[in-house]
Image (cartoon, rainbow, N blue to C red):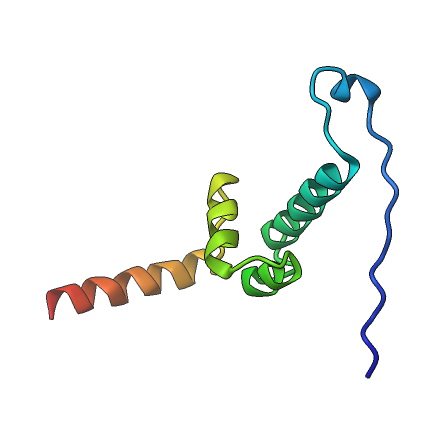
Length: 94
């Protein structure tokens, strides 16, 4: 199976944003790609491991990025979190 071609997206950014910081187009593209992947994890459209792979980053580094954006890598609802906490407390008492 042939690898899928990447999507190309054109984004217009205000010139004002570049007045005091001479960013390169490739740096901006890398930042936008990473932020888009972070947002996909936040919206639960991608798991953090797959997003890290797509970002060409080790999972630990991607988890650090998620942490800076205060996004949990865990996809648990409130009930699942309560069960996990209870299980951890039970292990701590054993």
